[in-house]
Image (cartoon, rainbow, N blue to C red; front, side, top):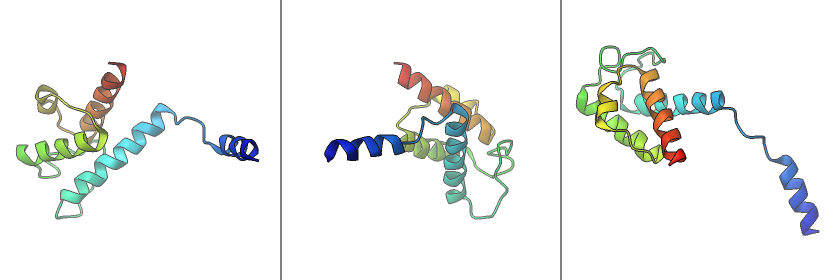
Length: 104
């Protein structure tokens, strides 16, 4: 009986997500984290500039990065954070350092 249950469960498992789907899910998480900190209903999209369009100062950006680092169990160096200007930049940095962490 147990083996038939195990085989049914293994057949129901979804195939591994493609890299694009993972990036899409990561972007949704980043947007949701940003939205949590915004008092307004700003349009948040990949090309949105974190400071100019969304109103984040350097401290708010660091708090956002810390929250995402905790969520994804990754560390983004300060030099990389300094190069983040858009939502896409942030997603790209997360993806890069996640891949780097997993390869180590």
